[in-house]
Length: 589
Image (cartoon, rainbow, N blue to C red; front, side, top):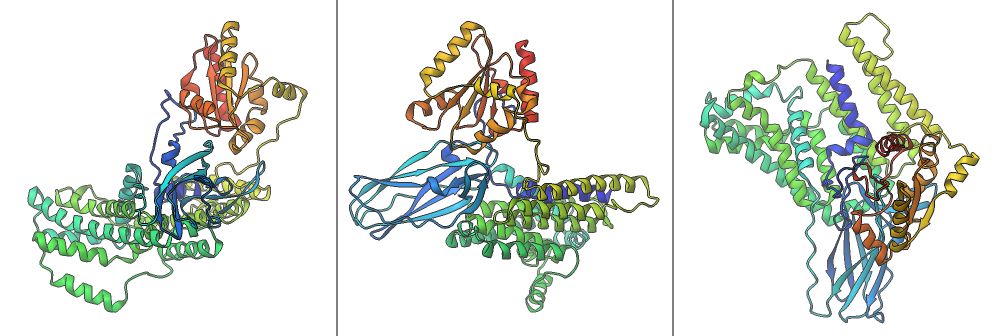
């Protein structure tokens, strides 16, 4: 059982899932009935938030905040002025993350917070036009955007920065659950009975017990929140997120996570200096329990006396918050973490101590699992600067290590639960081998480690490519759809743009795949090219409730869209083949 629990933590530890624990992306819907690939995307102004931080006689400072899961292109930034005779100096844009694409080559992108400084040589007031473009990690690319900012002349006040937050209820819930998980460590869970005795003094149950426990838990969580706010402000002041694009910065941060992981594995302990720890222990021992004030003081002190089992993941969370540059989000996340750590005490205070699990060897498994999670976070950080194959290689080593812990290669007589754990370990070992093979083959995606089979260049495939009708205007699209309706022919509409990487992937690897190509018969194939991204094309996006390409829409023979099966964002050939089969069944093809 303990090994099965450890396996679940491995899933969180992989770079594909590790950032999910600290994910701060709000959810959103597109307004369609449903999306076949369950992908939600934000409107462009929520995905990329632009604010004017400072505007004085010497310079203008802009701040972009890309929501988690979205990124901006360096080469798509443009800056113009109205009136045009007002000149600006060369923009100071930090170096971005290197990103290689087989279609577009080497580009630089930015995740998180990006500050851009524009030298100012003309004191007159003017309007600044800021052009930018970004994409979602899940595959959707937004059309080029232009924002207008009013820049005041001498003595004028700069426009207030727009409100920004990098948190969501989902992220707060995950931090709360992380706090609950931190309670079940070898040196914290056994302390709960002792702590409840000091705080409650036998006043278990009823409103008094609940009030005492809340008086302890809330100040403890508030102390964590203050620490999170300070780290968020510290990160915002130094703009760590914008600077976390270099191996010289990411390397030490990843090393910190590795050190924290080794601490969780028991190689050494992280704790406060002896002198400070002794002084705080002395203050705590003189604090009177059983009163609201005493419980509050104990709550604050306990947040300072962080045990060795909690300090490693807590320090990792602080590093993440400092990199996000979000003071409010950092405070709320650590407040939720503190509430999670105090939840078991609330359970005891209300008479539910019998529901808590007993101490035992399984606590060491929890501690080791947190260590694996921290190693996954370290790999996730390094993935920004390491080539994809190297990242995939590290993921394979992590999976292989957990597989060996689960006894994948221990071929001896075992109990049924141990055999099940060994079977799971063998699965992880196979996944590790797939990662290593994929890395040697040039792959870099932990979710798809094996190279995809190259589509066969048959004459039928070429003929199918020629069957696509490319159009660029809303009038031409309306005419093509009307023609298909008159002919009683269903339609597959592909939204495409030259600047959309995922569109290239869908065009070459999905629509040309044999299992997809075989099911396109009987469909009228239309491709709307939105590369120009003019006003008419953007209005058409709004009409179909799309934020940008890629998107694949189906229309029945009567001209109505089958909204339940529309695809937004990148999708692989296998999944799209399943959707095609379902649509063909609805259309009777």
